[in-house]
Length: 377
Image 1 (spheres, rainbow, N blue to C red):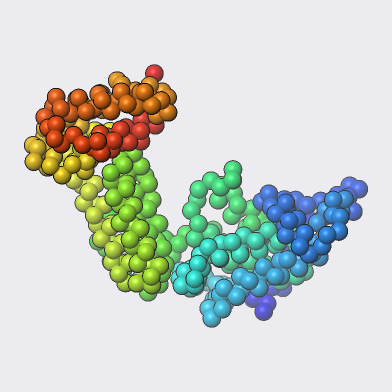
Image 2: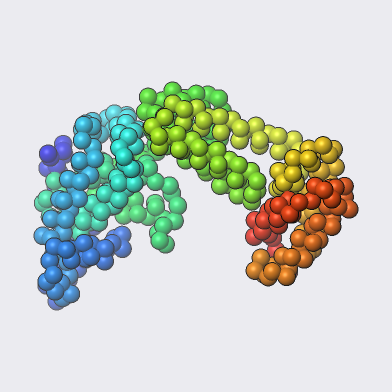
């Protein structure tokens, strides 16, 4: 199948394989740092010595065509031809449905990301071969869907933006426009990271026709909130991560309705937790110890809340005054800190019978998470 626009003339830039000085095989411009990986793949096809000639382009094309068929097979039963329409709104509307289709396959997202990465490698080394130009537009579509799945985080020294830009340069005039990668804009969401906690946004996601995509979005956003807002709070991070894991298990068991309901409940609980934390007026460090004190022993609920807050605030100074830069790897320092914390709690009304080892251990564990950002002399 040749997609619309396959007769577009060859791009005049970013040629990957061209004659260079005295090298008979040409110069490989390795945009993505992927030449070594392709050489390994080609090893299964030919054991001939390629050291002097570089990578045989015909072999690269053979690999490319194989990977292309693998990716196309993942879209079996899904028509993505509207993506090649001249209307941007029509193109954009294809992306969410394409993602939802992939997510319904067993291990679909993982398989898709790997398959498109492998196709991109071979494609980059196949240009400007006519067979590569035939599938240029489809590679652009596959890469756009891939970019909508993945996070913009550094990978192996390269940012995802760098990788996407490189592939778009290789694809050149393909229809993978930057706008198509903005999945949230496609769904009519302006500020996903703040809208997450609004009832309107949660209802929109809950009622999205592409339910698998809705789960992917909510799961990604909620996990991001946990990792950023509760990164230094052991108790809350563990609690919300456990609840998120339950939702993921429901999804894996194909209980999509229940999974979405649980994700919405998780988002609402995070929102309410953040509001309650704000009302307490504690610093981030004190709040983390406050949560550890409350979670460490149910009997502490009987204490006056203001008294417990005061203990948490003072505990920050107690811990900071009794640790050294390498305290987490020095057992003697850890043991001394545990004794100091236990004595401090007893002196401040945290009754001896409540001072079980797990309470102190939880506080020390919380101190480890906090101290990573402290300037300890």
